[in-house]
Image (cartoon, rainbow, N blue to C red; front, side, top):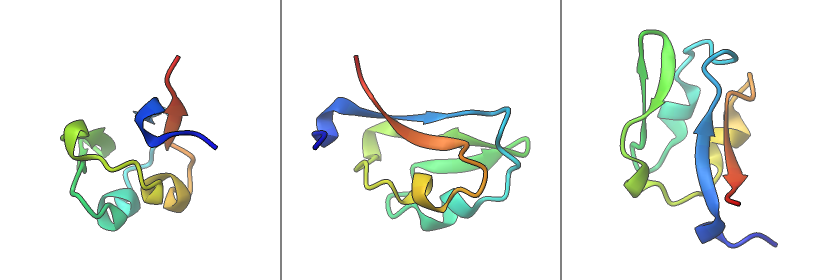
Length: 67
């Protein structure tokens, strides 16, 4: 099991269609849609719950293990 401290939030702008689902499901308002793409507005607020990753239909946002 990965520790949340070892995860970081990442986006893939090439895959993002700007639907805003991730923005809607984020409990801490970490994300925003700008120029039809998701952006991480305030990464320090992220609790790494994974809701954005789970709900993204395009796999454009995810939590990745830090190296």
